[in-house]
Image 1 (cartoon, one colour):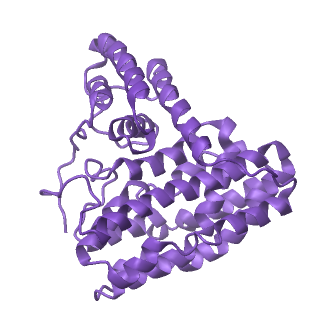
Image 2 (cartoon, helix red, strand yellow; image 1 turned 90 degrees about the vertical axis):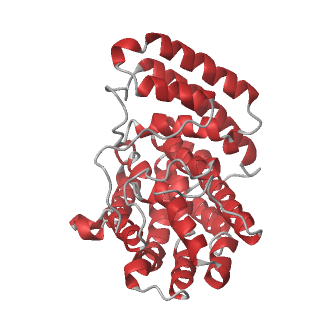
Length: 350
């Protein structure tokens, strides 16, 4: 089992934007005035020259670190930067471009649903094919132990904070939708039992696989496409105007979870691993089969009936969830089927 020092070092920069941000975050606050100006200019240039923000390591890491200020732990950060207006302005610059690209890649249907029942039907239709993704079924038959190790590392970036990005929406909803979201999140957080918190179950899975269970321990090695999937959740969750997108994202997330987790459990079982590894995935086979009904009908449907103005963003959020997760899954599947690593570089002493 891994043992570690108390304080984590700062992650490595992936380009000029993330390097500029890390200089701000790791410098005593009284000396950061010039660094903030450099950061704003550097991010603006990066946004103007990026070929694709969704796969841009530098910009995705920069946005991830800006969101990390709202979560922690981040021992490498000097001072309280969470609500610094200059960093919020920089974050907004990146968010605007990310949202524009997501809306371009995830266009709305010509005809939108008009009520909660139609929204639910649309979501179940959208997620029908994605509920049986290529990566999960391939992994159940072919993934090696090393590839499963990489899978856990990639998943750790979100799953060690599982459910947290969607929880931001709770105070922004009311009535049936709010009750549904609380019901889902209560299960995610173990119903009051710390041993059943899904993030904690996943942490035990990592430890039993001899991997580091600290959030962001593997931040240096996960690719931009993985960071993008988490950044998309936080983009929706931390912006109240996008609460409809948060609802749609969570609905699609839950409605495409049960069957894939069954196959991931089989992938580990095929290599002789037992409940100490598979419990996390087995838990989601049962829990998410229930959650998908609550999310699709009561959360999304209830929100649509309560405020029809949210319908377009509910559909957009669901589409963005499927799109971002599809990019992540396609990345791992492509790398592994061509004999390559899905990580940015080989682990050394982690």
